[in-house]
Length: 605
Image 1: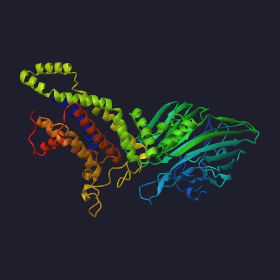
Image 2: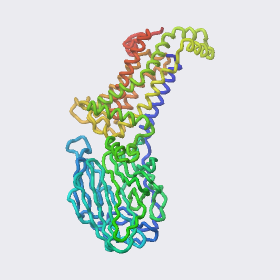
Image 3: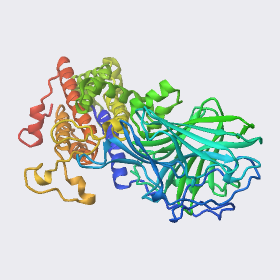
């Protein structure tokens, strides 16, 4: 390999290294504190008798409708209906009919068996309240008290516990004579179905608009990592939309609502909700009727909302109308979400998982990894097999690259003669070398192609391991119990031999190397020894330090990613060694290692 080829490889590797160093030393800035908007021109958000704020609901379906305050029952005294499914447990408050208490029974906060289950929804008045509301906004000629609100105390008409086999029915009779019912059902996974009906036994035509709301009180605990989206995720007529929480403060004041809001009108097929790293709540309206998507921010109460609002419905005398909508509240399991998309017709629902810019790589990579896991039963071994498959797909390119590198070695004596002949005439040397490459059909840059292809694959796999739920708490073997987390072992206590826990070193945690990062560094170092060290002292120094720099840089990465990189290095070394030998060049790996330790004189041929 000539100096030009080495320079290109070095530049590529260093570019990758610079990116890693930059994001470690200069992480993205924390989201700014929400800005205080201009004073609202409409009614302020309601609160319960304990002073806890409650999400604002659409106050009217028609312009000119009157709004009025309402009495609100204490949140902690509200009667409740239990929710028990194979994957969820919790309760529904009969005050407002809020779905506001959900635990994910298949997932725990940590690896500890005694760790509590992950809490998805939180009651009003609790820490970071998070809940879903459904209801009707009053139409022209109706008062707010004619429709149920956030404070309405519903009665149970049918059912005792919400399960996949037993839906529940809530009922409320309005002072104006209307009868409101809400039938809540749920499947065995994470999908609620809410059937809202209005019976009009009066002799007067009524008007109302159904709606759904998901509300979050306060800023949730965020991962705050640049490759992950947390906030609103929505689909509107085939277009995916994402909004971070900090963007809510930039919404303009909506004159009708009196608060900061962003609205998407005329949505025919879509959904909207909040996404965390692994969990999500999503409003999913019917696909046979247009609706309006609203993102709303109440700065005074620090409430973030997503809303779906349907057109106003006319309820004739003696008529009953029903509106059906769905609520997804659960884990972003790829197989489950994909089934909802393919079998229930929820457009683009699998894109609620943050696949990133390289989605054309991350989606197929994860699909193959998921299939391998279904066959093998262990995500660590699945990553190893995936690496082998990727290297197999790239083998034709690798063969061409390593063959070219072997031919470059064969041409080394002739290149030395050209250097002696050209002397200080660099232009003449370059011209004659290009003629030699053309004559021998050698491409000096072909050795860089596998490295260039590895970079997007590396980042795509990193994205997959970081954002997909299937890698969370996925064990491999021994001490690796979570492939989405860094190697928990540490050189500080000799990988557990010394009887003390590793202290928290803060910014110096990068020095607490685990077993896998050390193996990674050694594998990179041995791979370098397929070729003698560069003759240029500067290049020699950089190449010598590069494996150990990468070892420290990747030491804090997910152990699943480090496992991929180690496997990739081993396969690359094997391929390159065998291909070079097949072309008559026998790499002196052991000799190059001895040269590194000054136990053998460098090869001057």
